Amino acid sequence: MAADRTRTLLDMVERIGNRVPHPVVIFVLLNAILIVLSHLLAMAGAGLSYRYIDPETHAVETATTAARSLLTADGMRFMYTGVVRNFMAFEAVGVIIVAMIGVGIAEEAGLVRALIRKLVIIAPPGALMYLLVFVGILSSVAADAGYLVLIPLAAAAVASVGRHPLAGLAAAFAAVAAAFLVNILIVPTDGILTGLTNDAIHLVDPTRSIGLTANMWFSIASVALLTVLISVVTERVVEPRLGPYHGEPVAGAGEGPLSAEERRGLRFALLGLVGVLLFLALMTLPPGAPLRHPETGALLGDSPFMHSLIVTITLLFLGSGIGYGLGAGTIRGTQDVVNAATKAIASLSGLIFLLLVISQFMAYLNYTNLATLAAASLTGLLQRTELDALWLLLGFVFVVFLLDLVITGAVPKWAIFAPVFVPLLMRLNVAPEAVLAAYRVGDSPMNAITPLNAYFAMIVVFAQKYQKDAGVGTVIALMLPYVLVLAVVWTLLLAAWYLLGLPWGF
View 1 (cartoon, rainbow, N blue to C red):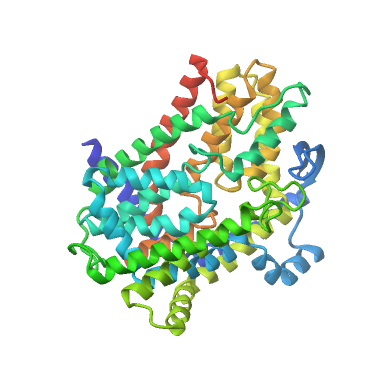
View 2 (cartoon, rainbow, N blue to C red):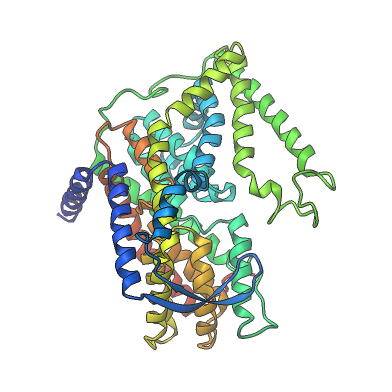
C-alpha cells in the first residue's frame, strides 16, 4: 500500500509538473515576477547589513545590501544592454558546448556504445547500478564533467541490459548533483571551502586552522552511504514506478560480443588516449610547465590545469573518439570529425535558447540583491533562535536546503554562512569541521530538483531522448525520492557522527 501511495503521489507530481508551460516560458514569467518584486521591495526599503568573507582577499567584510529595482532607469538600462553580456558570462553555456564537442565525436564514432557494451560485459549485473552511482559521486573531481558525460552514459548502459534508461539517468543525476560536495578524493571546491572556513575560524581563534582533509572521514563514510542509498532508491522506488521500457530501441541493447572492428577501434582509442595523456604530461609535469601556476608552480588548487578540467575532458574524448573511429572504420577523414562535432552542437540548440533566458534571470537575481537578502535574513533568523548546539547545527542544514533552491553555487552561500555559523557554533564548543560537514550535507540534495541548477534543463533534454513527452515534472518526479531519502538519512548520519564524537577528518 505504501508503495502504491508513493507511486500515485509521484505520478501526480509528474502530471502537474508537465502541465506547466515550456521551461523557456516559465523563466520568462519568473523574470517578470522578479522585476515586479524587486520594485516592490525597493519601494519598501528592504535592506540589511551582514558580514561575509571575500573569496579573493580572504578578508572579513561588512556589507550593507538593499533591494534594487529593475523598473528604475538604471534597472531598465541594465536589462536592455546586458542581454549579450549576461549570456556570455553564464559559464554553463561554454562548458556544455566545449564538452559536447569531444563527447559528440566519441559518440558519433561509436566509442561510447562500445564502452557501454564492454562495461556491461565485465560488470556483474547486480553491481552495475552501484558502479555507475559510485563513479557519479566521484565525478565531482572533474568539476561538471559528470553532468555532461556520465548521466547520458548511465542511461544507455542501463538500457543495454534491458532496464529502463530513465532509471540510469536518475541514478546518475542523483549521484552527480545530490552528492556533489563529498568525495573520497580532494576536489577543487575543497580548497575554496577550507579557505573560507579558516577565515571564519580566525574571527574567534587566530591560531587555529583546518586542512583540506578536515572532512575526509565523514566524506568517505558519506560516499559509501550515498552509493547504497541512491542505488537502493533506484531499484526499489524509481525503477518499479517506471516499469518496462517500451520506447525506441537503444543502440547496443541486446547485442552480443564486440565485433573485430569494435575491438580494433578500442585498441586505437587506447592509443589516442595515451597520446593525449602524454601531451597533458608535457603540459603539467615539468617545472614551469604551462598549466602550472605561473608564480607558485602548483599543479593542484588554483592553477590553469584545475581551471580547465573541461578542456582536458574534451581532449580525452576527442583523442580516444577519433582513434576509435579510425580503428573501427567509422571515421574516414577530417570531414567526418567536423560533421560529428557540428551534429553534437546542433543538438544543443533548444538548450542554448533556454540557457539564454536562464542567464537573464540569474543576472537579474544578482542585480536586485534579492538572493543575498534572503540568505542574510534566514541566517539572522536562525542565529536568534537560541537553540542548543545540535539543533542549531541541524537548523543550519535546513536553511541551506532551502537556499540551495535559489542559490545553487556552493562558494557564494558559504561566503555568507561561514563568518556567522562557524564562530557561533565554535562558541558552543562545536568544531568548525562539523560546521563544514553540515554545510556539505545541506548544500547537495536540492541540486537534483532545483530548476536553477544550470544543468537541470539539460537533464530534461536527455530524458526526452527516451520519453518524448518528458518535461520538468518528469525529472522532478524521478528525483524527488532521492532528495527526500538523502536529506533525511544523510542528516541523521551527521547527527550521529556529532553525538558519537567521531573524527571528521585528519
